[in-house]
Image 1 (tube, rainbow, N blue to C red):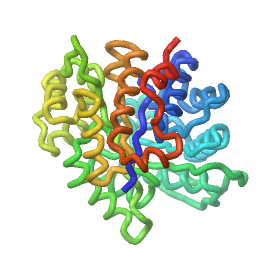
Image 2 (cartoon, one colour; image 1 turned 120 degrees about the vertical axis):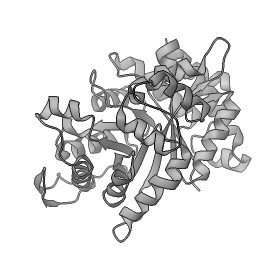
Image 3 (cartoon, rainbow, N blue to C red; image 1 turned 90 degrees about the vertical axis):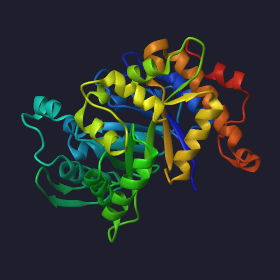
Image 4 (cartoon, one colour; image 1 turned 60 degrees about the horizontal axis):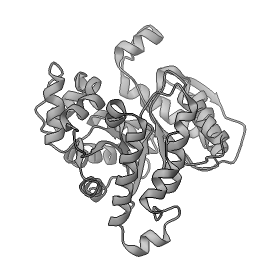
Length: 348
């Protein structure tokens, strides 16, 4: 079973050089991919292109892009361009964004957000993979293709929270991305819905789960960390609805208590690196293909270097759990001493 582990750059960048140590860290620890969220400062695609221009070429992804910001033709073009610039695989997840934000950009929210994302992703993934598209739908009319160009693998998929979107992702996507989602809910709700949507259409897309984490250290408070990493999500009705369905006692009106629930339920991973690595392995055990460690809470409270330090130790613990033959045979596996890895990722 695949046991890919990646991590996120924990900011919307204003300085492209801030990303470079994280790219180098991904190389040294053997991370599957470096992910960015959708940035409204330096936009994520050119930020990653800048990283490629420094000579740091790693697999990259976005979790999740906001489809309201672009046409699916442009989404395909941007993803394919990144794959060529990096000369590494690229994975992009898209979501509909909050209805209020969609209204502010396009004048009105999507009437059917899940269907809108499915239409967008289906068009973009086919274009990105050199296929001709002939499509007339609710939102888009596309009859064209991109000029053929060979690139490393490009995956385009959807962010999923609930069963309806998971079914849409199953039939239209290369990957289904979860965010702040408890393992029991992934296993009992998301995965069956993804499989249902894929049935008779394609093999089920792989599951990629973004997991917030922080290493236990003197003076740190896990409840405060969880607040600093997820406060906006804990105030959003669709996220709290998903968390309640998973069995957590949360309400959008009380994000402080919601953060405490994330810690107590183990949705926010906190502890020593070995404990965090064990919890990451639990996601793999239920069939998650790629776990993306999100150190945003640590970065928000203690800075980028603290996030790099946490990631370094977590990846060392993940590597220590792997059988010795896997560690020796894996391309780019984390075999360097922790001190060497930390130096490679040091923020100057």
